[in-house]
Image (cartoon, rainbow, N blue to C red; front, side, top):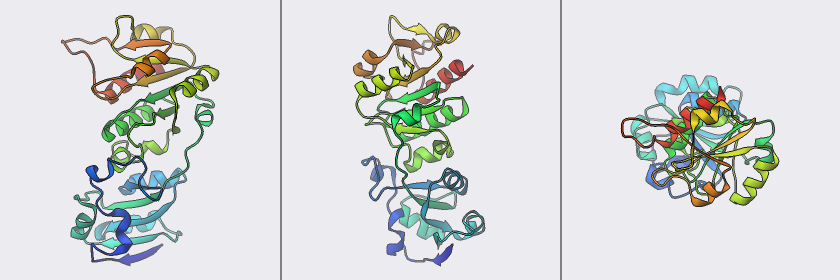
Length: 266
């Protein structure tokens, strides 16, 4: 590990961390250079434990000791900066002390992710990175074996997604699928029933579905606001709904995922 003290926000060594605001990176699915940003020592530790490789670390002075322990024995460059430089570079107040620029791993195949799985969460076109991160946290905590994300779904490795997931995005196997038709073919070939969580006149209530659940389930959640696409609904073997009260027709997508995963993992 190489400690390098940097006091100029314009220093080219900090290029990976520059202008990391939501609006700056929300426009791109895969950040340029095949990198993603892990924030906080805890998240960085989980990323490294999952086999991900840091390209560099930006750390505020008071957090150096923890990062030294985490990266002991590596040749990772660690850029030590004052608080104001960290904020000037990233475009926001860095409260958790450390950011790591991580090499983005190659995604596994759909077949590899499905191998041995019984409960899979599918996220179709979610645009809010916070919801993606929360859905991954629910998947990790409530027994999902894998997560699949659609081509237009927000990036699970985006900084905010990783942060909200508390690093659980690294412990749940996941991949991005391409065409719905091909995904359906592979899911059915692997023995999965596809259950779409949606409002529909012919929907089965979640408690009824869970009482006689099939052996393998792929649970599909739709985008915020509009819900599932017509393509996803047509691909589903069953439409499932969460019974609601109090005049509320639905939950936030990540909350709904947590409820459904809890019911189906028991």
